[in-house]
Amino acid sequence: MTYVVTGACIKCKYTDCVEVCPVDCFVEGPNFLAIDPETCIDCTLCVAECPVEAIYPEPDVPPDQAEFIALNAGLAKKWRAITERKDPPPDADAWTKVRDKRQYLEM
Image (cartoon, rainbow, N blue to C red; front, side, top):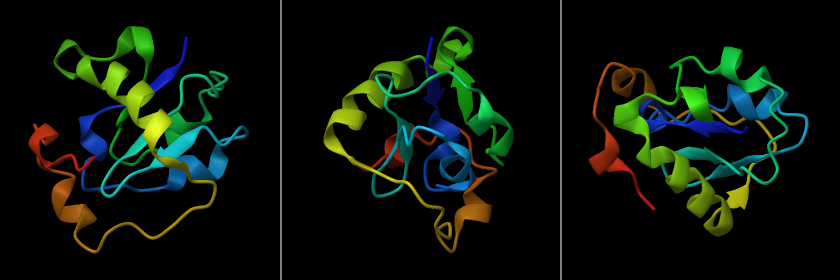
């Protein structure tokens, strides 16, 4: 089992999760973070750190977010690892309340 970052992360990109990851399994894109399923060790530390509750164990990903399982795996091959916490985008707080943000994902 691996963990999956879902759509709630889009345009929020808080990196609290990155800071606690013992194996540096997060990758960073322009406005989203993803988890490399080949690196993730299922430690669960990132889940509690995500302020927008965007991270789920793969079997528990909500059905309307299922496409993010494959997206995380694909983006992990494309994007660079992020190993240190960064400030979120200036408008991140405003995006936390927005639902159905898939169309805003920049790849």
